[in-house]
Amino acid sequence: MVDAGFLVQELDARVGGGILAGALAFRIFLFLVPVAYVIFTVLGVVSRAMGHDPAQLAREAGITGVLASTVVKVADQSTWTLVTLVLGAVVTMFITAGGLLKALYVVHWLIWRVPRVKPAGLAPKLALIGLAVAGSAVGAAVNDVRTSSGVAGAVLAVLIITGLSFAGWWWVSWKLPHAPVSARALIPGALLMAVGADVPQLLTTYWIGNLAARKTNTYGAVGIALVVLLWVYILGRIMVGSAGLNAALYFRRENRAGQAGGLWACAIQPGVADMFGRLTSPVER
Image 1 (tube, rainbow, N blue to C red):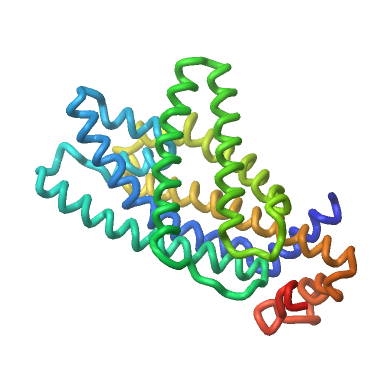
Image 2: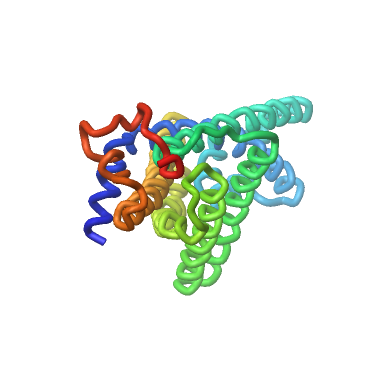
């Protein structure tokens, strides 16, 4: 485990994990803005019609709710303006979903060193948007459980978030570019995502959401944007670390089995091969 940990750290340093995480964070942020606007504009209209407080709903839906508390102002817009803005946000949502997918594919190309492929068709974008909508819905539902059941509800909320994060990222990792490995080989990265996702979610639930609600007049939209950017950077770092963990363990197994012809030495050791040059994939070797 210690040896594998050092190899993961070396691989992360060689691919520039922090820079890749920053690139992912920027695109996640651009994607979340129209997603939050569409979701909470529609929910805001419905909740007002039912006599509920849209602001309270936003505070209970995780990081997208925090973002929505700034970008969604349902009461200040006419019906036609809302319809126009929502349609524009839907188009923007699909554009930014495509940008985020490309960033995820590039990150996995660089980490796994596989032939370049691109997301094709509308299905990947719809899947990404569906995951974002489902994440907001789960965030609101989990917070309801947490607030209504005390300590037991908090524990149950953590278990739900952990399980869903594991299953969701395991499936996403399988769909993204990777070496020809079994689904079982992607479990370590999914576990890292499952555990890592609890930290930003708990921060949002117990601190960021309430802080944003109290400090909006003090810090304004800029303060909220900085909080969300920090949140998505942590998420991007976990995503990069997840892919790096799976790839490093795979390279290590290949090297130890003697099947890669010195792949690990060529891929990691300085001066042997340029990672961004003509280093072939494990399959080609």
